[in-house]
Length: 86
Image 1 (tube, rainbow, N blue to C red):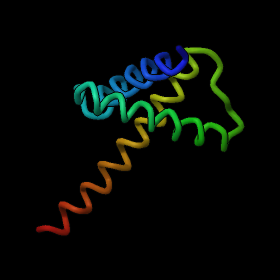
Image 2: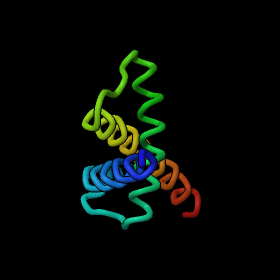
Image 3: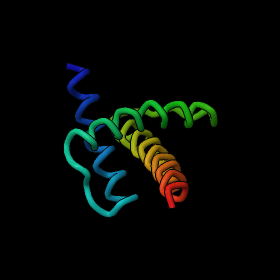
């Protein structure tokens, strides 16, 4: 049951992060993957500062922050590859 809850939190976090960074959603699967990876990344980033998520809202905030960082990294790497092609 907890696995489904984590998937739901990842989906919401990925959708919110895509709305913040790109201004629109990217689809169910992409949002889910971005949210889950963002949750792991956000948990790691928060732990560096001694912060830990508490409850559902804390998990969503942590996942959204991590997903935003992930999308920024992907965009930065993508922009570098596009510049090399020109």
